[in-house]
Image (cartoon, rainbow, N blue to C red; front, top):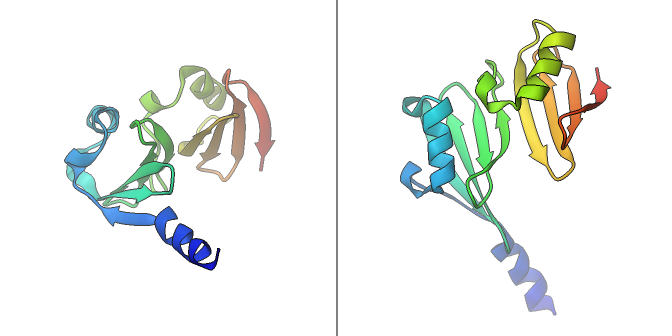
Length: 137
C-alpha cells in the first residue's frame, strides 16, 4: 500500500518538452489557421495517469492547452485579444453587443460550457448552447 501511494503520484504527472510536430494533427491545424507559428516558444505535454494534454506557449505570453485529441481546452492571451474566429459566433455576438470594446483575453471549455475573461476583468459563463448564464465583475 505504501509503495502504491508513492508510485502513483510519480506516474500521474509527467511533464516534458516536445517538438511542435508531435502535437495531434487537429492542434497543429488549429495553430496554423489562427496563430503565428513563428511566435511559438515552447511546446510541452502533460501526461497524467489516464490522460494527456498539450500546452503551447508563445513569445508574447499567450498559451493554448489542447486535449489528447488536439481540441483546445483553454486559450489565454494576457497581452492581446483572442482571434475572433476561435470564439463561437453566438458567444462573440453576446460579447460584442453587451460588452462593447472589451476584448476576449481568455476562453476555457469544459463539460458544462465555456468561461470567458474579458480585457476589463469581467468573467462570463456560457452554457453548451452558448447562452450567457453568469456575469462576474
